Length: 465
Ligand SMILES: [Zn+2]
Image (cartoon, rainbow, N blue to C red):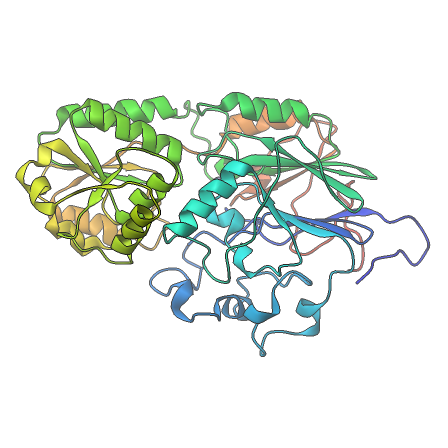
């Protein structure tokens, strides 16, 4: 498919959005110039009440049909020339989806969160997929510990070095590091013959590496188009200062100091930096942090020493023991404790329960008044279908749910300050329930993007497809 202009004018740069519109997550942005095409992110929606594949349904119930099923129910975008035919199925594969991408074409992933990369397993091998070295290392370790792509195959990842331009036909793409709650996160700067487009990915300005996000802001100042995440705009402004990673560790230390028995935590394993801090704090308090098997296998594969999980005295669901055995066989040591050791001395342990095996809480030596510290782990919040059973189980066992989280996303104030400093001609707020809450300085045009519409660098919709 080529897009030569019938009037003979030179090709225009256009931007299309196939997700992240009025929702958090699901980001997919396509930039074209002539027949050159760059796609930024390939995300899944995060589970919410309208996600037909949310628990208890599950995406993986029909092996090999995942993409076809998602397309049938409109939960994956109909991107021509992107998907591998073997995942489409005869009933779904049509000329539009199967079309050959005529020109240079590449996909770039901003970070290792499913709402930015969950569909990568379905991409045809002729489309190279780039991510930063740290992101690739994390995604490979996740795959090896049983937390790989949700369907299709693991991509043959290519590494994009920070700052080094990758040329895709008429377009060049640079990855610029940002601070987010997963290692290796970046935003992108796309340079086209008509101007420059910056995409934030997900970022924050209150984390341990906030200077990365400030440097990103400075590097992209004056771009023609800024595409920004707007997660924090989704809710009424809170007005208070955001919790820092240091506050999280302090609250965890406080909970450990108060507790006389077992302490539970809920942490998102991809937040590797926080996991490391909490494991250290537990050790300082004379406690061992016991991870679910797959999480232990992941951290061991990332090179951590002294990772602890359960031994075979506590069989776990979902292939956890296999993930640990495989990590050990591959030369990544994982230590184990028995259920008996934890039952005998609960005050010497912190346990991260498997959020999807709630009855296994009954194994643990919990007494009313024990605390679960929720630190942005799964289930993520009350929009998550696992939240109600999770809180009901804790209530039944008398376990107090206490929050100690720090968002991976910029506050509304920080987003506004960033847009003011960048001062783009056009800003597209995405990845938000309420993109209209983004206020822009004079001289900047805010455009609320619509699905599949082509926009020029001036923010105007370009007629035709
Ligand atoms: Zn993210």
